[in-house]
Amino acid sequence: MSRYDKYEPKAGGYRATLAADWPDDKVEHAVGVGHDAAGRLVIGAGVTGVRGVVVLTKARKAGEVVDVMTSGEIVEFGPSDAGSDAGIDLGVAATKYYAATNGEITATSAAGKFYVGHTTRGDRLIVRVSSFAQAS
Image (cartoon, rainbow, N blue to C red):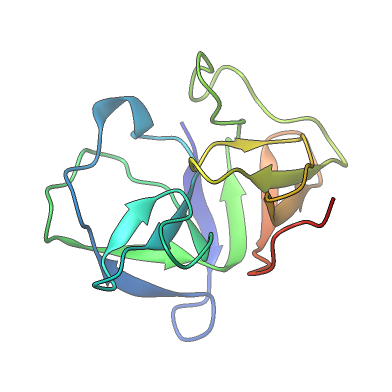
């Protein structure tokens, strides 16, 4: 059950409006997000590429404003790929994590993925989102 821990409200992120209802299976997971052509927040890269990480503790509706983290720390962190259980499947210590264009965050680096941060302990992600996709 990932949670924002350290978040500097003036420099650690920004707020954006959700383009669609947040799916129940993404609640309490760290998810890579971007923006659609209208500037609304979408899961994954959208048209802008991954610009931040979102952790929601409950499903939100389209049009609601949420905090997007670009720099900070997330506790109880675990990868968000299909089949992972929030709060049970935790990250690996001293590992870099990347967001795919579908928003899933894993330790797998590949062309087109976006660096989102690294872990100290396995369950603490230090978020430092790079807005540049990995090269091949």
